[in-house]
Length: 113
Image (cartoon, rainbow, N blue to C red; front, top):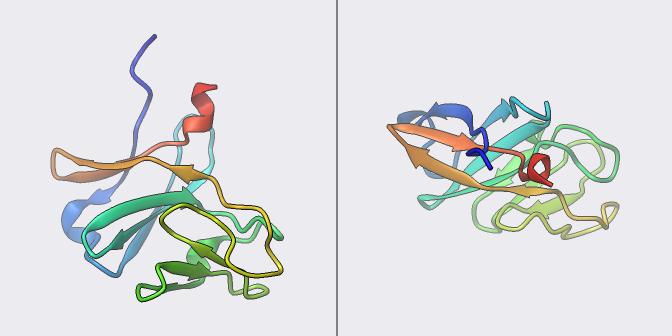
């Protein structure tokens, strides 16, 4: 089996604690949003499970470790993608994230199934 493709998100200096950056998986075309929560990186699919709106348009609350969808107020835990309140009940897909060679990378692992 070949090494899975990682998608470049940004250089590490462009993703400081409390910030997030987006990218698009090169294999599946899925939107990815990577969060820097106190130096730890977390990646989710950039899509609210309630009505498929881009989560990256929302507010990242570092105290709660959550992202709120601006469309209807659904919130998700950035660490694991779980829905925190209605109107969303399904979790957002969680993706791996890493830093390597001075850059932040992620990928849609569902492409490996």
